[in-house]
Image (cartoon, rainbow, N blue to C red; front, side):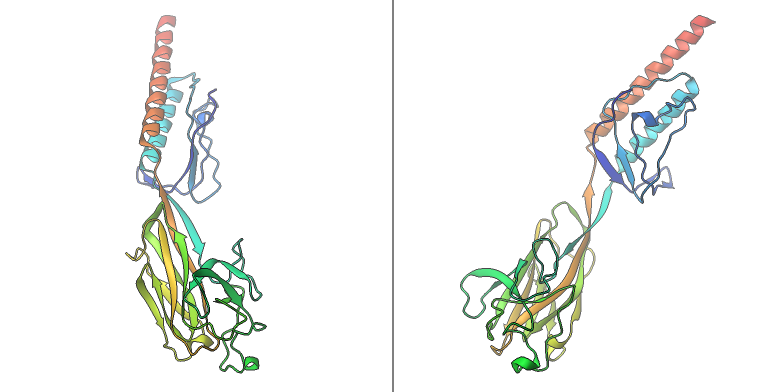
Length: 299
């Protein structure tokens, strides 16, 4: 029996008017090797997963089995030829994450994804840091600031250049995410954001939202979204920016919790598909001719 090697791919396809929604690990042994000519299919998940054998030896005993094997090969070739892999993916773009993508939950921690430029007393571009009630920059009544900032939670933290300074001023807060290999027609972005005092939210330079309104925007999280398939998304690196455009130099910061969703497209190599299908069909045809010749000789 040929060893099953090659590339494993995930499929969600329609072939011969049949909607297929199961995971079917298909190897050389799948095709009619039990003497009954039946494909043994193991169904486990919402998408097809095929491991295509680079070498396939067909050990057959009857013409019916050969025919069924040929049908299986043709069906698999069809599936592979029309395969368009759509693996759903998400990217967390929230403020206040550590290097593992967890929300810090404490103050003066480096946000590994967001940077800040142009804040008071800042030189160059620096990592943003989380801001909590025990930091001087956090707006609450104990710091003489009212109304207070909407509280941090498990989804995101407030960030600023210097959590221990009461004046951070205006600044540009930026993060990036990579959509290389993504199907941009499936990309979307949604979540909530807030700012102190005023500012804008943009994606690749395209305006998404402004605050205010509402007045005193730092007291609530305001929803935002970029619709699925928007031309604002680009292949490769995308830049999400919060710009503080006005500040009173007392308790400034920004906060966002959001998710980018998309599907990644991958198409099997056409040459590999054709090589597999043509080789397997030729071998099956040879086996069938030999079987017929042997039957004629016996008669």
